[in-house]
Amino acid sequence: MKNFLNISDTSIQDLTGILEQAKMMKNARIGLPKGTRDEGQPLSQHIVALVFEKPSTRTRTSFDVGVRQLGGQPMLLSGTEMQLGQGETISDTARVLSRYVDLIMLRTFESQTLYELAKYSTVPVINGLTNESHPCQIMADIMTFEEKRGSIKGKKVVWFGDGNNVFNSFLQAAEKFNFSLIFSGPKELDPSENLTENTKNLGINFRIDRDPMSAIKDADLVATDTWVSMHDNPEIKQERHNLLKPFQVNEELMSRASKDALFMHCLPAHRNEEATSRVMDGKNSVIFDEAENRLHVQKAIMRWCLSK
Ligand code: CP
Image (cartoon, rainbow, N blue to C red; front, top):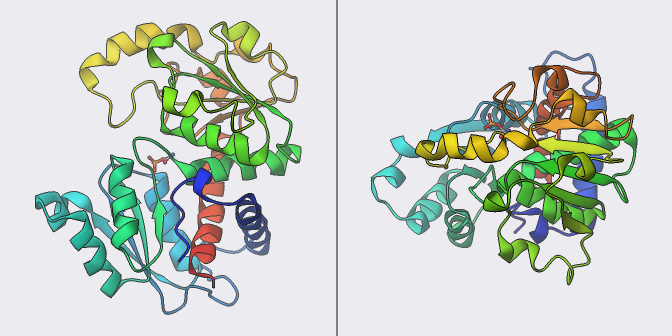
């Protein structure tokens, strides 16, 4: 059974196959109304459970629309409204849902929950974000980069902010797709040592640079994210803002990147905090292409999960 839990769990052959499929499906839909079903309706007769234990706009909408375009039936479920939120175990939930649906997408808190669901589910499981990773987002980001600039192999990606779930998936992707990755953020909000201490052994071209001006030099892709994630304690908001303020992506900082550098943000954003509106709406920004590509790449991921 093919689960899509993390980029590190998926082979580069499968990852590139998913991206190719996404590109083909996107091109085949040019000019069509959004409700038109894809040729062949590959998810015909299939029901997909979309389980959310956290808020979402992009993931929720893009998976729902994606299932419909593939000819399947989406079933949106809120974790708090399920018995899961009342103490039913993940393992029981997995075994029950598997009797009703053909595929499960889960957005949750701990990655342990995701892996437990996948362990007991008899249908494929997709990671729609955990506190530790966001692989669908990074697949959309790589698709977006490659549409605009060609292969990401050997390119320089610079991350500004904290070592959050989106960064973690960038780090996993750096190994698979062979691009270099720089983390530029305060020491207090460094990525998990569990991930970074192994980068040399894995052959990942990764380093930390606390000076934003030097980190961004010659960057091909500049990425950032909100300073306070959904699972962060809101009481530490001011402290995080103070730490992260020097790493704001603004026009002055972007001017030090390569002329053709792309700016990415997975959204939702707090405009003029982690990035200025002038950067977000500037000529290098591809933030809405990223959002669109969530739809195309997730459709390819669902097809891959259900393929033999
Ligand atoms: N980028 C992203 O996952 O957006 P949502 O939280 O709106 O799903």
